[in-house]
Figure (spheres, rainbow, N blue to C red):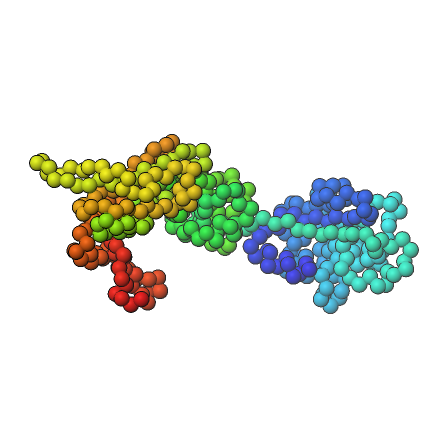
Length: 398
C-alpha cells in the first residue's frame, strides 16, 4: 500500500506530517491528536520519512523528530516488501519488534511492520491483534489559484463575472440553490474559462429576470490542483438579475374570416412565473381601427376575446401558457391590447413577436399568404427551420 499510493501522491502533493497510531485495545484513543499517536511534522524529517516510505530512498533511516527517534528498515532483504517503522526501538526488524512483544513497563509500542508474522504464532504476549495505523498528510505543491477580486455585470438572463487571480489557471462558475459539496457539480455546468495574465471572464447564462442567485466559482491550477470547497463556499457571489420578466403575446392567427370563431388565435406565454406571494392579472382586449377626420382611432370591442382575463388563481396562468380565442367579428383591422395589474405587474414587459394586429376578412376574399419571418439551419445542419407570421399548409406536403 505504501509504495503503491505514496509515489503518485508525491508528484502533486508535499508531505507535511507522518503519524503512527498504536491501538492496543478497543478502548484506546485513536484520534490523530490523542495520546496513542506519534507525529513528525518538521519539514526535513518529514521529507526523509516520506521518501523512504515511498521507496524513493532505500537505505535504513534513523531520524530524530519532535524528541522521538524514528527508524525505518527493510526486513525483507529482497526489498520487495514495504519497510518496517518503529518509534523508540533499536531495530524495527528484530523479533521483539516484529511480534510486537510488550515492553516491561507496559507502555504502548509504536511499531508498524508489514513483514510476515507467521513466526510469531503462539508467542506469549504477542500483540498480533493490535492495530497500527501509519498515515501521511499532504498539502498541494502548487495550489489552485486564489481569487483576489471579482466584478459582476448582470443582465436579465446572465451574470458576467470578471475575476483577478494570483496566478494563471482555470475558473468554473455556476449558480446553485444550495452550497455545493464537490467541485464537479460546478464544473459540469461548463461555465468556465482559462486565465491570461492572471485575469479571466466567465459568463453564467440561463438565469431568470428579477431573480436572486448565489454563484459559486472554483479554480484549478495548471497542474490540476482544485480549490478547496470551504474556500469556494466562502467566496460565494450573490447577484440579482435585472428587470424585466417577459410576457409574450403571440398573434398566432393574424388573418381570419369574418363571422367565424378562431380558436386559440392568441397565445400568451410567461417566460418566468411571478413569485408565490405576488398577485398578477392579465387582461386582453381587441380594438377596431376606425376612420375619422383626423385619421384613425381605436374603438374597444367588448366581448371579442374568450377568455379576456387570467388571474393568479388561474390554472392556465400557473402553467405559463395561455390561449384566447376570437369570437365572430365583422371585417376590419383590429389591434390587440394587453394590460397587467397586481403586485407583479411592474416586473413584466410585454413583447409582440408577430405584431399586435388581426385582420378580419370578408369570406369572399382570399387569405393572405404567410410572411416568412426567419429561416435558420438546424443544429446538425441537415434542415432549414422556417418561421412564418401565421399558420401555413406546409406546402400541402402533409
